[in-house]
Amino acid sequence: MTGFGLRTSLTAAAVACFLVTGASGAQITATKPPSILFLCPHGAAKSVLASAYFQRAAKERGLNVRVDSAGTEPDEQVSSAVATHLTKNGYAVPIAKPRKVTSSDIASADVIISIGCDLKNLPAQPPANALRRWDEVPAPSEDFTRADDAIKKRVMDLVEELVRKQQTSR
Image (cartoon, rainbow, N blue to C red; front, top):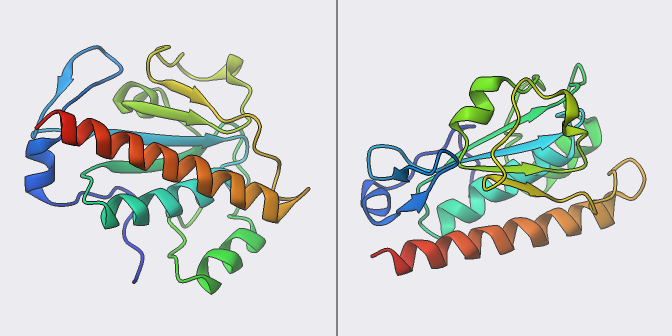
């Protein structure tokens, strides 16, 4: 299976069936697929792994979502260890270059996953109902295998949660 773009839209039928309450409290319908934003400090490792795994798992499960990743203090490039690992395992590297999170990213995201970020200096504060913290994920530079396993598990749990929400909203 090949990778797919940074902002992923899947089947129109899945969009029509998927209904969640977004960060603003408004219901999201077929006109706007839910948006997931993965944040990590440097936008170069944890958020890149999470978005690559989430994109594939969401596609395989028929979820219609948009996926994005960013950093609070982005590095100049994606971690070479992360890029090599993803490519070796058949995933596309979902971004060409890390970028800084914007207030627009935060405002448009229905679910914001913070993976070890200091959220005090964000351009906008995420709504509490949209924010999830995965701060227990270790830095890949400290223990790549443990970080990768933790991210995969959390991503799969999130995908399954969204699948259940999709099924109950039908």
